[in-house]
Amino acid sequence: MILRLLLVSAVAFIAYAQGSPPEQTSVTISGKTVSIHYSAPSVRGRKIFGPGGLVSHDPTYPVWRAGANDATALHTDADLDIGGLRVPRGDYTLWVLPEPNKWTLIVNKQTGQWGLEYHQDRDLGRVPMTTNKPAKPIETLKIALSSAGSNQGKLEIAWDNYDASIPFTVK
Image (tube, rainbow, N blue to C red):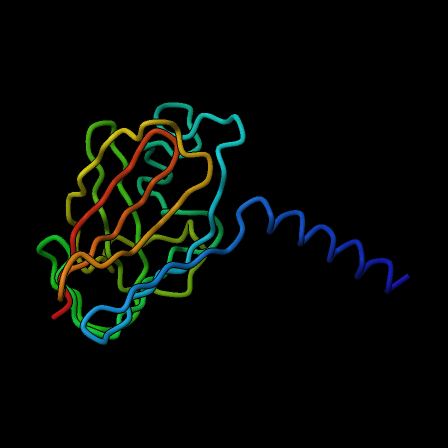
């Protein structure tokens, strides 16, 4: 009986986990590593952004965790400048305020929380992202870090009909 219960629980966990599997991205710039850990949901025929969407600007959840499950985690071995926001080396969570014509990246000092536990009073800061419409909808959320020069990088978040990015500098 216990073995059967464990097996059923394991199968349920695997099925749940596959809905938004864990992903990570990292880049090394000037010998310092920047990494992001997130869970990557897929559209699967659902409305994602806007009124009635999975991610909507609503008073209950005014910001999006930039993924699924746990809050999206940023780790940096170096001080960063993300779009004009000074981010000391360390650990943070990333959130997004996705509005129809602009996205705002939020760097928050709280870490290790479930993705619906957001405290604005713990924000390190907020910076505007550049948003574009991709050539075709993006089925599975993709967060990418890339090098853009000797001490420059780019953070990109792409999902559904949005592709948002912001430059950063390794200090």
